[in-house]
Image 1: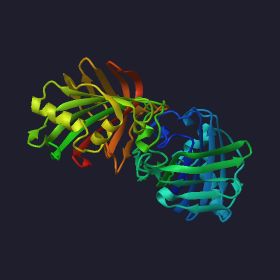
Image 2: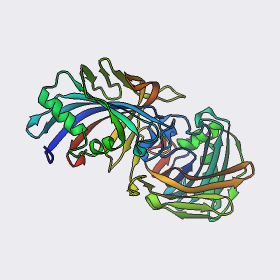
Image 3: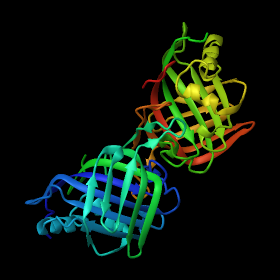
Image 4: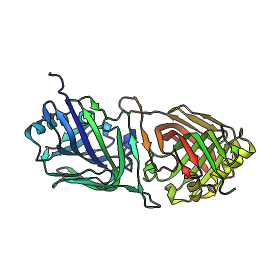
Length: 209
Length: 208
């Protein structure tokens, strides 16, 4: 087999899941309500895959696991924005296949038992820390806001730092106001649940920043 | 005594009954409905007015029927028998909530019952993730690394709370075991949420 191609993506990520705020799974705990459901949106700030420039590529993922993610048997779906070029799409397919390294992108195929066919759908993207949101036309999306202090209602700031993180090294914790994804057997939605936003750098060696 | 200036820097070990990372830190609700905790401090350097607090150890046991901010809790203060009477009074004053101090001011407002302070031997070993403490006759907390459930590797994670009342930054740990048995404060948990950190407080709140 040819050696892994070199690639590097600096990614904005907007995540919403069904867990409590801060998602205990980030700390190797079990999902708050037993199963794991979530959506992730990504936009490449800048990146390359071999000779292909990946700047601006937008994609999204939706997943469902009956228990914790690492226990497998998941159902997954990806969507990619139609503005993605053929070369970018080929690069993204390679990355998401899990065969060219890349931390979370390498691990996900090991725990997803069934992938739905990748969809091409327009992705609206607005990354703004605690006020981030994305929408995958006709399929899903997520909107987040600062968690509010339950007593004073003041906007709450917090972060998670994971030196060994394979998805991010540092993220902000948000309130996922509303999120959903509907495609075939996947029918996910939530309100006011755990949200994470991060800007990370992922390469063939994994999450490096 | 009101308006007394005070400050301390302390090693801190926290245990509770939540899942790792404790969603309450993010204004989530307790993982299992109620909140149970046993925490301890070992002051590196501090003072309350003119009373030096260097080396003082103390612990807090607490229980709430729901989330902390929903109140109706029970609180208890334990001070190490090695503390002088002045130091004991200073710690009691801080823990009373009458002298500011972020979480020190907030907790008493959420308790409808407070145990009389107990003076007892407190052992405290600060050793990063593997820190532990024991409150003689009351309870014990033993922290360790969380382990990756697949690889068994030791996991490191931390939480930043820029406006935190109890700490600004802490390492997330697994409490291998903790228990408290003091009248109506009675709990025992294994592999529950823990934190270790170094905290700085003044009468204005948590400052580091």
